[in-house]
Length: 268
Image 1 (cartoon, rainbow, N blue to C red):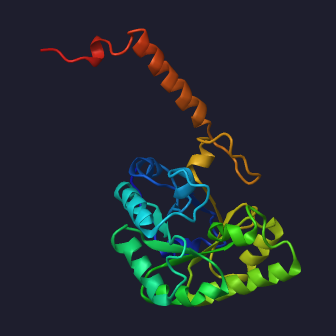
Image 2: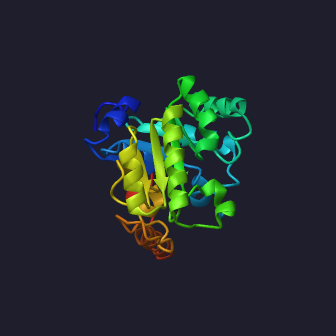
Image 3: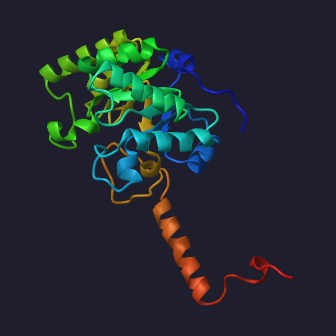
């Protein structure tokens, strides 16, 4: 497949015209498969901690981890716009720290843009990063790095006070220079309202159909983990059963001396 590489301007111009598609990715081989699709954006999320590293949350993921996995994806990805997460406490201590962390994801990781969680309180970081020419994706609603203070995996924006705070947050982030904002785990009506007051696109996950685009985790949508079934997730394949079946077939054929056969063997 040969197509034009997606740019920040392409994403911005999609608002109100075309729904934006985004998926997470953590390795070069998966990235090469995504190249064969019409995907607009790829996120190397700190969800790598849950999906690939065996952690129960994203909090243990380090900046070094994110640079490593982002560089893996960037070596395999051609066309979608590549966004990398700034992990827990890699940007909130100071503007200087946020700039240094973002620079690593761009220079060493090969990302085009960075994503960070938070609202008004991180707007100075967003402004500084974007002012340096690094595109920024914001993230509000349920923010996994704040899972302890949020009391777990819970829908956000369910009261008038919290909806007002979300509005203040997204407008501040837009003003600071974010070119896109992820809305996670909130009532569909709230996400639609936030989308309507912004000039920049919104990307939803568990935020209903009114957003300008959607994002899902690669492994979740492909059914790698059949035990993970949140309300917002739709699985488009059942790879876990296919993989288990293939591995069992391999075990059986080795034990029954079916594999390797002559066609899989070398001759003098």
